[in-house]
Image (tube, rainbow, N blue to C red):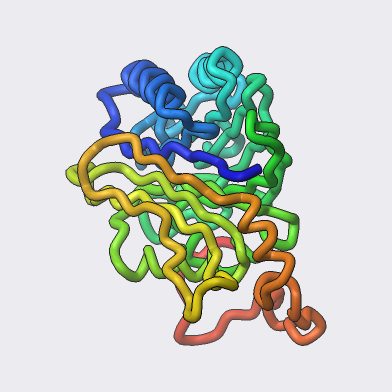
Length: 292
């Protein structure tokens, strides 16, 4: 696979889930016409990242993972022969989840993921966290590639991308809904660098509500044999305007790089990392709203 093209759908949401459905389907068609292998939505597209703070209203806003909203993107993926990563507020008990579903080019569900690191200090305090991180082998017209997913705040924990790398991910898809400033972009750059993988992030554009666009992609290839110094792994960084931005990942080059460089799982010493799985928390990191 010489390259894999991921369309970052930096879209302004509509007034309701039906608006978002129609706007999302149209954007996927545009991404296909531009040559995309995968179309990626920003976080919780079904509601435009609107999260009611009343439990009953929250449940009312959620959609089932096999319902009409999500299924429409599966049908379109098969029609276009293009993978689609759609995001939605998922019906779930006892309370909804912040979820992502990746359909392959045949319209089959290749990966379903619920956000593990919910923002319990803010609007997501009522949501049910996901149970873990998974990787799928995605069949594209260019060949097969191993894909994982994180959602927004997951990015801020190195463990998220590390687990996905250990499970074989070559590219991580990241739906997002927050201001993408220098530090958050640096986190993504670091996750790509330390795990030797690609990361594609789709954010909402400027003006919604505190987002600022800057959807981005990093290829994770820090060193090339032909170069005398390290290189910037940034493939693309959008501005604030709505649009569809294409990230072209050099997958064959990434695979060759992973086979010779020193990061990822090449020289780790897991036996020394026991403290990482301890649930003990001490000051200054005690928070009253923390949930296990």
